[in-house]
Image (cartoon, rainbow, N blue to C red):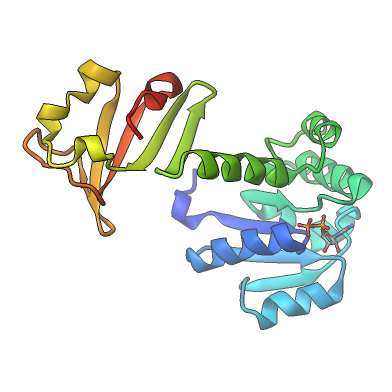
Length: 221
Ligand code: ADP
């Protein structure tokens, strides 16, 4: 199996979502191929330098996909949200050709179900997910970042609450009082992983904890 760093990505559909995926992967140093049926968008991503390679093709045509080498990629992202038929046919083509990991963007619940039926390994609902994240950031501004492990457990990065200011890790007793484990404490982009019991926390620092969402909500943030 390929090492994560060496993974190659193909993005089909260079709309707002597809371009965002390309640009982030590219800037993280990964090899990305972008494709779209619209020649203008293909030229644009090359001019904007948000993908190393880009080609124009109709992804509903298996021959075109094969010729472009799309079936050789480890991960293919299907970023065609607003064209239901094209999105389903493309996903089917790519899974049938044996691509290992296919992520597809859905624009509705029915669309998502269809994508799963034709073999998508992961379905994303960017507008819905962005809406949920916005709501969380508005209501819990001290949660800086959140990684959901399952519907009940998360890893969250929060700013150190007022109540914890000046206390050591030992004094906080996060495990006893909240059932949470402290993974890291950070200050200006520098994180101490598995902080020592004597590490002192201050307002303005960040802390990363893991635990159940119920316990996380009990934190004085
Ligand atoms: P967003 O909402 O992210 O802006 P859209 O779903 O509106 O994305 O756009 C999807 C992109 O997919 C468009 O740029 C469109 O040209 C492209 N696209 C649509 N059908 C095909 C196809 N058959 N082959 C390749 N690209 C396609």
